[in-house]
Image (tube, helix red, strand yellow):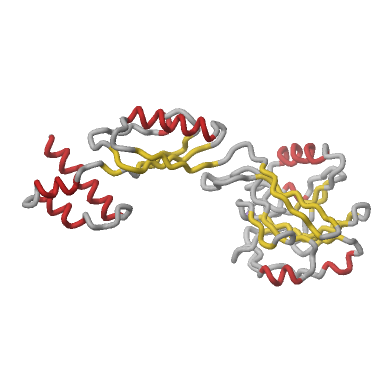
Length: 301
Ligand SMILES: [Mn+2]
């Protein structure tokens, strides 16, 4: 339901996806264009000829595809520009003559077909299939949901991705999320302790990734306290695995009280006195850790 492509599709891309859709022998496909693959002048969507089981709703006003053999009608509209600040008029499904009426809708934020959940539900569609947000999200159980992207698109699209399978029964629509993505972006926290060397941390990360699944793509966050004398060489390419980023939030494991006792009359003691009571996760505490480390290193010189 919109943004099948993240940009304007190439003709050969439409041919490939058309071929794949055409292979679905027991499935009718209904699609619309979203804000990324909007129907601009010259868009290949406008002239592409889809297989008979594929139905693209190309209008920027509400259009309908009817499937009497299934007893289903599907309404939707396509974007003709990058933005759509107002929702096109949404008729009630009442006159479709089909027992099941589905509304497909792309957007939901201020610039993209904004809507109020209650108003949409009040229209009386049996199910409202939402697109635009990458994360799968149920808005109203059995009535309205974002299916999310089939595969994670952005490094911050963490969590499972897949599709929604809906089934209409006498009791209404039952919707299930089916995880289907080949991989996920995952953010993992790796606890560092003062006894760990750089190699130990690398090995630990490797084991953690092996346990979580090597197919996924990772951002690793190191926290805890490190041996102040040990330098981590943690460029993602130096640690095996699909790692896009390693963030080092460890703090040097100094005994600040002892350092303070020994350095009351110098800058090191003043720095600790100023910041030691801040919360351990605060920027101030982190700044103190960095400062102490710099001064200690300068001393060792
Ligand atoms: Mn979108």
